[in-house]
Image (tube, rainbow, N blue to C red; front, side, top):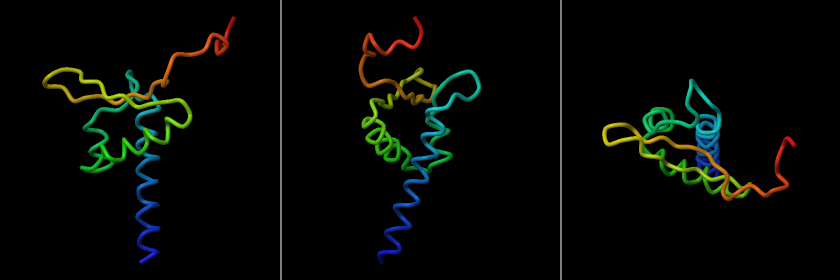
Length: 93
């Protein structure tokens, strides 16, 4: 039984990693991932995986947002900063 539990945890971690790749890295023109891409890659329970990933990303100041693009278009998931950047966080001056 403990081995099955370990395999299940490892499988979830793999899916969270794949979700992070789809959401965090830009593919084609637009950043993020569409809901159908996540469903195809992660399975029917992709919202649960995205929620778990969001909890992990919040620890480092990021959050995942779902944006509806229209009535007949799939939603898109983006990773954004959890708050506003501090004035000292500018990269170039």
